[in-house]
Each structure stands twice: as structure tokens, then as C-alpha cells.
Length: 253
Image (cartoon, rainbow, N blue to C red; front, side):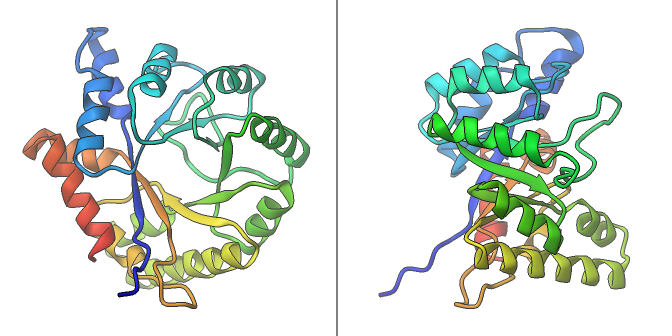
């Protein structure tokens, strides 16, 4: 029987660290949460080490890399300090993201054209250490072409506009944004890039994206990185159940 690929789930555990940092306590444990996610079906763990260290800390990344059996996906800004840290830790993936001090969470994709040389150079340096690179970008044709020129292995499509429109019941907007995601992902694959997606997903809107198919009728998006919705759900049903429900949502929409 032919085996069709199923999308992977990367669980972003930043908000476990957010809870810890609120009162500067040793709990909840980022490592314990990550290991539960791993046992519950997560294909990788994602963590964003921000320059201001508002949630995830350096030692969290060190311990995650040491203790995880699934890949570690390190989200980071394109800063020299972060590059130095990533080269030392050597996670399986680095996702380069835009970063602003005043934002609550990442608000959009990388400005690739404006920062082409800096991001391309950073990508090359990471790859020389056998670290795979994804770029967090808007789902646009231009972003796909620039990402391919930079030599990245993957793009992670910023799905915030689609998710917000869907949550607010703006049907026409959500349809147009979903089309934009599909067209960008199709071009990414044509250019040899892996298509990932993240930002704003919940247990309902993620199903609409997971239903998108490529030209061979396989799932168009290969990987989802989701955090906030899973951590919120975990507060009600527990981390194991929350992860399993999201795995189901992306693999059997």
C-alpha cells in the first residue's frame, strides 16, 4: 500500500517559559513540557530565543538540545549574538524570524529584499555547521523567489492574516488569504523549498490549511509550528491531550 506523507507538528513551548518568567519561579519546567509533547506525538520542539530573553532562556535551549529525541527548531532574529549562540548549540533547524522589542509576538514575515545580504550570509554560516534553515516569510511570490535565492531549505509561511480573518468571521478575507498561502506554498515547492506554516493557528482554522494539497494530491504544508493554542488548551485538558488533538487536526482534518 502506498504511504502518503503526513504533516509534522512542531510544538512551540515559549508560553511555558512565559508562565515561569511571570514570577521568576523554577516552574513550570520547559524541559518537562517539551518531553511530554514529544511523548504525545510532536515531531519537533520549537522555541524562540528572543534578544530580550522575555521567555525562553539560553539554558532552556542548551537543555532541550541535550534531552530531546526529536529535532529542535530554534527561532531567532538575524543578529550576530544569536548566530554565535546557534553555531555553538547546533540545533537541527534554525528559523530566522523578524524581531521587534515592542511586539507581543512576531507580527509579520522577514523583509527579505531589504536585508538580503545579511540573511543570506547568516543562512550560509548556519548551513556550514549542518544546521538547516527556514525563513519566516509572508506568503508572497516574491518572498518565495528571494528565499530560494538565499539558499534556505524551507520557508515558514506567516499565516497570521488568514487566521485572524477566519477567527473574526471575515469569510472573503480568509478565502483570499488561504489562496495566497496555497499559491506561495506551490511556488515554494516548485523552487525546491519545503513549505512550513505558523502563527495564529487554533484547532479549527488549522484544518482549512491542512486540507490544501499539492499537485500530487499530498498535503501541501509539510510542517506546522504551533504554540499559543496548544498551551491554552493544555490549561484545560493537559499537555498530552492538547498535543494529540492538534496532531489529529493537522493530519486528519
